[in-house]
Length: 282
Image (cartoon, rainbow, N blue to C red; front, side, top):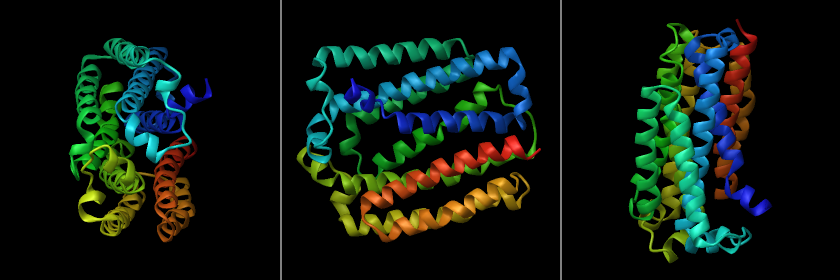
């Protein structure tokens, strides 16, 4: 049972849900709108849909990446040892369908973006090992799609400086996730080679790929502070971003697994302090 729960990548899924919640509140400009019952229901259905579809994507990834995962993650018990191939397939298809049904009850724009994300997600899981640099780009675009998805969830929100920041943060998030995915491909090079992959580190080498990832991460850093200096975020956000910055930068001096964890930590920290900031700073 624990292995099945791990397969859902709850840490990453919950990070995405936190992002959707934070972006939605920023689109409103204040948490006060969440007191409305109709908005609560729509938000709840939207978050359920995102949870189901994201989890389904990870389960589908496990289904198709079993050969490379056996090498890259030898300690993880593959789901195919716990569930039959057919049952695993039925599980992620069931999650996909349940997620789509939930999205249908949110609104048409949200449902349309979900359909597009689902098509890209399926394409990624089927062909990711052959996409070279595009592999990391596709994942980054999928993650950044939580911005239009969240705006659709709240029907565009209301004009405010907080909402204006939602046109800056996606640039930062795209670059950070791009760097993270490149580093993850370095970690998984051996398994990807065995699985016939053609990822960026395999083509240009681990050292060049690492340098590229660090460069991308560094150029993204000033963008994370831009919303504060434009008055779009408060001092709580600034303090949080500054406190976590040394961990983010420090991870660049360690091996790829630590660097990967540092990049992911920074994404989660920015999302967390963004949420705390809009709750505490009026």
